[in-house]
Each structure stands twice: as C-alpha cells, then as structure tokens.
Length: 117
Image 1 (cartoon, rainbow, N blue to C red):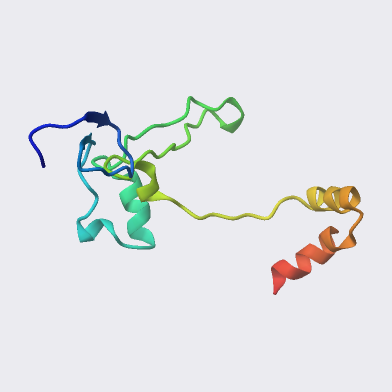
Image 2 (image 1 turned 60 degrees about the vertical axis):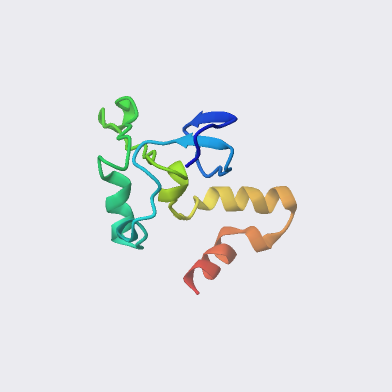
C-alpha cells in the first residue's frame, strides 16, 4: 500500500491498480473459508458480515414476503457470490417461439424431450 494515490474509489469491485486506493467493506475475500463451493457459498451469501442484507419491499402478491436481494461486501462485490440458476419456462413460451421462428424444434414436446435427457 502506497503513501499517495491518484484516485480513491469506494466500492471498487474487481478493479485493481497500484496508483488507485480501493476502499471496500469486509476486505479482499481471499480467506480460504470464503472460497468454497455448494452450501458454503449460500451461507456466505447470507452471512451478515459479508452481505449487505438487502431485501425487497414487501411483495403484495407474495403474501407481503420480502425477497432476499444479496449484495456482497468486499472486493469483487456481488461477483464473489454469483449464483448459477436455471429453470424451465412455461410450455406456452416455447410454443410461441416455435411459431415465431417457424421451427418445430422449439415446440414444447420437443424441448421437453431434451430436458429429460
């Protein structure tokens, strides 16, 4: 760490430069206990010391539930808690795509067969 800097950035994410001082909450995320996979990532994403704990406003159509809106503290920010999630869309979406592109490959029964493989 130098004595002088050209710039000071608060909330620096993954940007790194010797002439710029980066200031982030919760440090650099280099501790090995923060580099795990699976359930440890979920725990880390919800841990108060590593997550800002943001929630949505109560959702009227979800019984006034507040939904987690994880934002990570520390260098790399929310990149450090990226998730990979997938879900199947409704059959009607696939059927509409098949109609739009005039290609039965996208017709739901054909797509569903691929999901089952």
